Length: 259
Image 1 (cartoon, rainbow, N blue to C red):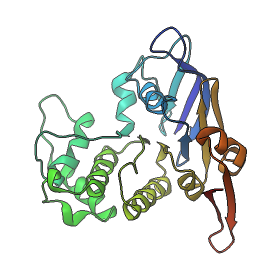
Image 2 (cartoon, rainbow, N blue to C red):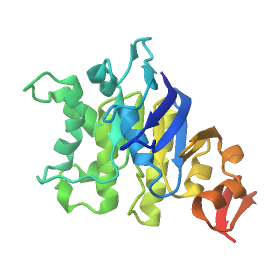
Image 3 (tube, rainbow, N blue to C red):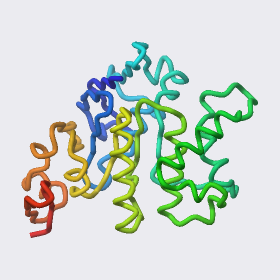
């Protein structure tokens, strides 16, 4: 799989919210996107998925493992079949059992009015087991904690069997332990060959995940390896705060602290 994004720009009014967004993402790669509040990170994800159309001639192309090429603007159905989306907030008016909620992720592969088959439920059970939340399968979704709900939403995205998962601040409103468990889920997806794009406000999460990191600014997207992109100067510009980066040899990674 390869995702190729070229020269995206977007505007709600006349002035672009951001522009000059270009990057590529390969099979199993993780890219963490940071940026200040209101910069348009969620909007960028929605443009990538095809919810919003970009300005001008910008393009999003996904080349599957089978060699097929899709875009969200010419082949929306085929494109979205390849992508699992985890929104920032997930509200459900009905109290579905977790197993039934997760199997809804099979919807892109089912015909109109078709019901999930035995194999779809078996796949849902396999994903729940793999993510360590199988014991929740018969719980009502609305009775779960915020962290458990987020894990179920991720499971629903995975059961779609996508080649790319896009997550909008997946650790938002979660306690410290559940934040870490979500990051472990991201690593599992990468190990399975599934590419992941996620947004976050926490530089430490980008350092933990490694791989590609990007900073969204009005004038463009700066993309590169985490150690090259997340410098003290760059983080101070985002958060308007004095930042100190410390390397922990015993953990073999960098941590970020206010200085």
